[in-house]
Length: 414
Image (cartoon, rainbow, N blue to C red):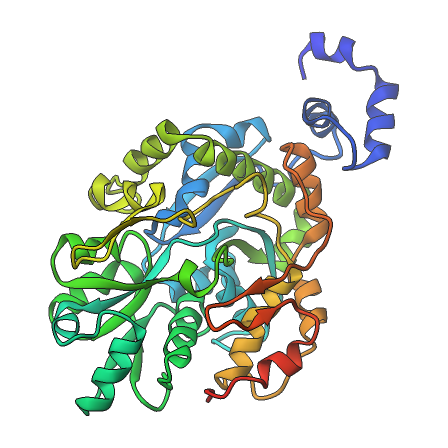
């Protein structure tokens, strides 16, 4: 802290501010309190893993724009090859944090997908912006949407292969939910494989799958390359659905609570910057298109982050529910009900043999107290409730109130 700031903020006022805690403290004053001592980040340089996807943008921009320095940390973005690699490196401590699939973090916590380790979700990184791509070959036979796919699969019997990105992840759950809502059992009526996001387009090009669910830009890329069409967006399945999170281990948060808060605050501010306007979104697209991040053309990224969609068959539309990183803070709160939803689907599809204590697990993983402190530091609005209510594509409402009943209510299941 500079001498000037020291004179402006007496020792007594620092102590008073520290006692107040996260509520009602101005970001500027809070920044001084952090610098004053006890709230200093325990680890000042942190490695954050990411997968080459548009929704890694807030992590990358927090580093590129230097927002991280404002909160006393240095973010080193680390490009990873697959979600399995992200999982392994988080568990063994090679990564401090990661841009991660919501369901991946929950799956590791419960030991559903490899090693079991207590995990933490610090914030949601984005809502919306994923899609289901079907091959051009399927589209030419009338499979341009869910009903069309169901009709084709019933008429032309063969093994149909679909890809998702990680067994307990978001894309697996969106794909399964969408197929089931259209009368297709993804586990018995089709073969489902796991493919890392950047490899989806190449695999479809050589005929390894009939369709896939992945994040952008790998759906729009399939359209640009003329090999696939967009059959559904994930915001069609669940408007403003949770998607990627800032994940880490419970052990890291326990040892480094100030670092966790500082990194969360920095990424919150970067999220706000991205959503602030067209110029920022275009700059973000240009930045993350670089080979060190997503490694694609800018036009594969910038259309859909502005809500400009096409399905690859001549249909175009403006989607108000495009990928959002902040949306006045509505995106980022780690709602307990969001985490619980993934557990209900894990139970539905046989990834969990028994019902877990849904609420207790969500409370263990989602670090709401740290999030609220980071929100105060970054001047981010916080919702009144830790739960929210949503209506999905089939008209079924999810509000987190009776997760066991909800998980058991689906006609199509494992």
